[in-house]
Image (cartoon, rainbow, N blue to C red; front, side, top):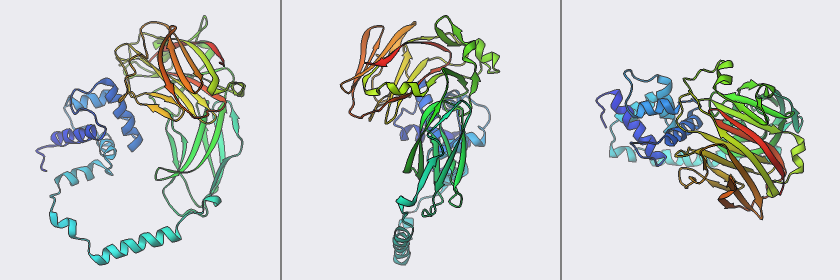
Length: 397
């Protein structure tokens, strides 16, 4: 296919990206841009804001976007770079290309694969990854991991230190030690993986006295701006608003995230399959560049998680509901019942393997699940923009 200019090539790239994620090619909603922003980051490690994506989609730019932005879009389509994407689009396709491999080449490929499988098959019992302590107290927390990968020959090993936010490092087979610093209290499932396949998993619990509060520059900020919770109390509420963000040198030209966390060993007394949680939440007015408000309530258990998003009226995002093994994506499920206009009481209960969500005393969602989630480890509330929260009740149902 031939393209008259870079702008036309970019338009086709964006169209391919939309089709890959089963989104409309035109008239995307704000939640679609947010979802694409997260997916592009997962594929490329490069953050493109939903604001920038909207401008690209609407052709609202004079100059060609930065090469870093173009590379991220190409990598989201499984190309190595924008340059490779361009070459592939301009490369003429010939039917004879399908028949170029000879029988000899095919035999070599098959034999090589057989030798690789037989000789390079890892001995899984001899692969290990383990933190030197089960839990680390205080933020920041530097965690030391000992590992043994002598029996594993692949050079594509990664250690996924955190999924939310995304925190991944490459592994070196020749060494046996690695350290990582965490800036969020949470219960992390650290995964050793090879090309997306999980080989080993180990838990790490980062604990903190009382509430931990922070402002994140984006939803995947591994080093957020720490805010002293003593400065945020307003009566019984913890509040982060625009004035707090500005005081910590975050301007209003971009969206920010407000994070409130409780993570300590005292939570172990609560069984996540018999949970009774009640929060007071409120979205606050903001001058930052956002049109929708979302609050994600993330409840981390020893063996599984619960996640409930609460939206402002008329909005929803890429965030969905998680109940153990069940995941309900917002892009393919109607979660419009999980909305609030003014300050609301949010009640989350688990009983007889049902997740039950009520807002201001009215039942809004019931989700069956079967997984045993274990004891409670961490409670996090993350607002898109400013917000305030009060913990009213946290106990076994």
